[in-house]
Image (cartoon, rainbow, N blue to C red; front, side):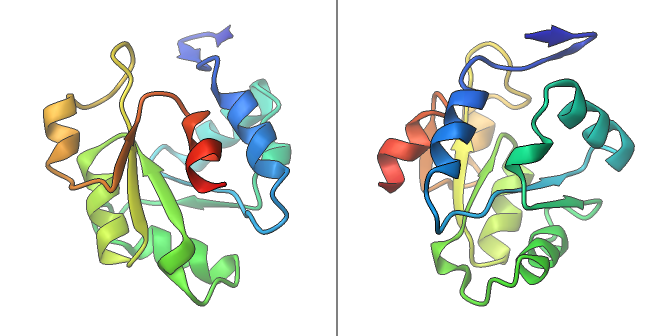
Length: 137
């Protein structure tokens, strides 16, 4: 699905639908993109219903945005939290916040090269977002 210059990968909605079926899963967005643009994109693709929390993060690789999201979601133990990022800085922030750093790398559409993502020491590298549900179940 494409709205302007933003494309929604075909695996996003199926992955979000599957994750929402887990009662214990909370979903959030921690993004360096300006909040107004994030909200517009969520609205364009009707994604806002999936997320319990949205944090504007200007600090990556500092973990401040992730720590703020944990606090707002009232999560005390970050060891069961997964942060899926597509940049090395996302993974560095997750490590610093004691959150499991997972990466997604798409051959067509990733911000960073696979080699650069690996420098962030992800626990897992996904090729499709739908792999999350098979990995956490």
